[in-house]
Length: 503
Ligand code: NAD
Image (cartoon, rainbow, N blue to C red; front, side, top):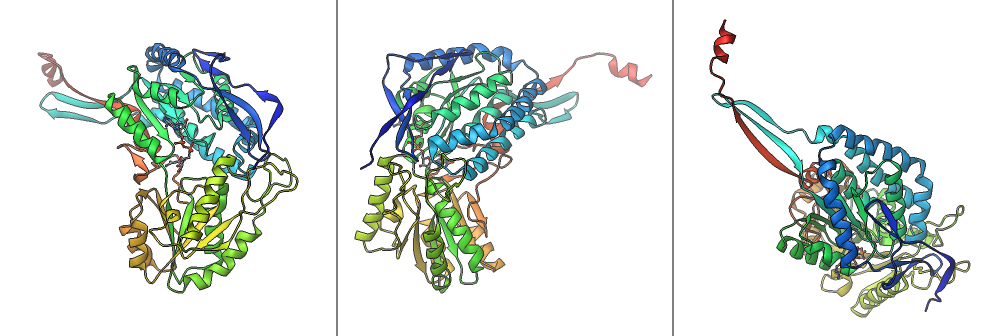
């Protein structure tokens, strides 16, 4: 049992509505932890339908003027924002590590993935260019123009407090929409900071609003008549709920869900590189990534080649508090005590159902942070696909190992998953890699790359229960999601004009 304390001064957690920071009182509050210490550092107000209504109304009122702001001027907001984010980079990363528990190196890496989305949004004047065809029919010209939708919404998860919001609002705003952000109630402080920085870059009043809260806010956003589109990232059951409810209310929805990603290791794979990549994929960010490599499928003799070094690597991972300037650990805590207990019980279920725990991080104790939500790197071998731990998303520092005789069986095992986010193969065989790339049922594939998460210019292409919608987040699909096309056909009746030219 963890002992919970309160920090002597709690960080404020206001809403940002109509260009004003508003303290929200008279509502329920939920605690935000520093998971490295097991200490409450803030309390998030559970904003209500009324607050959501004010935020959406403000965004709707700001839309006509923002829509008519030329794309080059909208892009300039993001050129300024990029610089301000860079100037405050350390502060953002420290906030991410403090409220989420990632190491500073992991916070820096993921925040940079966010910055790349701001950079992508800076190219919006080019991204918004349509097509034209002169003389589509005699005397008729045709063009497509991309126009913004109106009020768009972002609902984000706890595991990437800076990056995931940055997947959404820079591109949505650059395309000419206005926005309401509902960050995870577990990590609101980073979202507040990055929006404060957007305000410093010159955000006009009402163009972006932030409402802290949980389920009530989400449900009010899903059904609000003035919301046109919703971007969601989180677990699959909530993604499905958001997709079904949002679309039923006539909204465009892109909803990223959970994952269970398989990494196939062929017998010819380079041992050292594969072990390094597997260890990073499984234990990086304490396994709390939708692109975490959660199951290694060892083909043939790959298990005996790779497992001894992998066990050694897992045991060598130094776990500890991440809210320190120096002596950073290799891995931080998981998000809450309840989440850690759930991961423990999934590992236990694996053991009860016949799997073998060959590296066990459940006993980890950190003397200088005794109340943190820690767990060490854990490897569960001989996992079979009907086991609970094989089917459920664990979202902790746990790597399952399955063993298969050949590539066909490995692909078949990976393809049984209900999810379809990422999959990877480690091999020196072009033939095996090609076969895997073609047949594996996942939207993002790595060949000798353990975490094939896509960067800003490519869409984040989850499949099956990892994604509900049509147009994915990021890249050109992101631009399509945040705009609607208009096709204009033009004919001018200018009698005699042709005669003038003939002279
Ligand atoms: P979550 O689904 O619990 O919460 C996500 C958001 O939904 C939060 O803002 C939360 O307030 C809201 N929410 C939670 N329950 C709700 C409900 N019943 N009704 C309405 N809204 C609700 O997810 P999480 O625990 O914050 O994040 C981890 C999950 O996110 C994992 O499953 C992970 O795989 C997934 N994830 C997916 C991607 C991706 O791109 N596919 C990226 C990051 C995280």
